[in-house]
Image 1 (cartoon, rainbow, N blue to C red):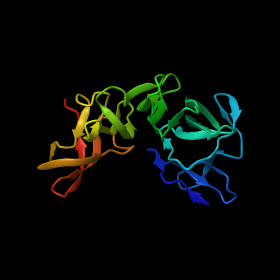
Image 2 (tube, rainbow, N blue to C red):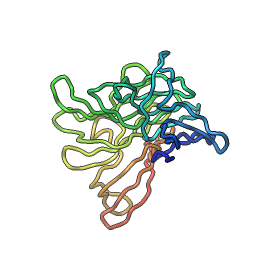
Image 3 (tube, rainbow, N blue to C red):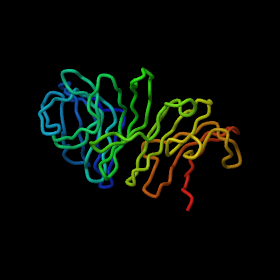
Image 4 (tube, one colour):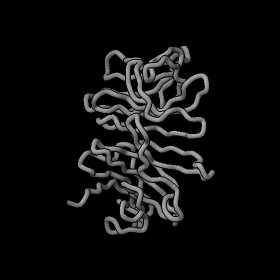
Length: 238
């Protein structure tokens, strides 16, 4: 009946996507031009961590790695709290368990099975926190968050490579924005608004979920103060 807004493709050409059928069932699918594989529908039970559950069904972007595993955010019936899950063919594992007090955004998945994603929650002190985290089924690792008197204000992205490096866009408490690879807004920055680039000054910069490769190179779009917009690649030193 309709397709989700974004897709993901592996090196073998398998495309993962969310969609709704003509009978209004929603689910996760994949294919490479022939028969389409149905991984789950919101009308049928699947196995999650060895237990039968039924997902709620949404249209968010999944992420398929080169082993064919698919990461996605989804709700679980009947509470419809959101979590992050990985798997295929009706058998899945939990990366971030559903939590009524935590929101999660679309994950990206590397070939090691680690997913990176944005999450928001209230911490023990009642402070609202937004964070970029990664995980593989155990405790989540915080890549960067909005705690602290000076630093990050909000995030976009992220992208993860097979080495576990995560690149993401972020705005800062100072009003600047840029692209970063870690929790320190100074030491871990890739590019920041106000910096010189291609004979001009950066006014905005964007990185997408596919913006980081296994060599650590980051591709991004930058808007410059002379009116130009370009696509650039940042390469790690050494």
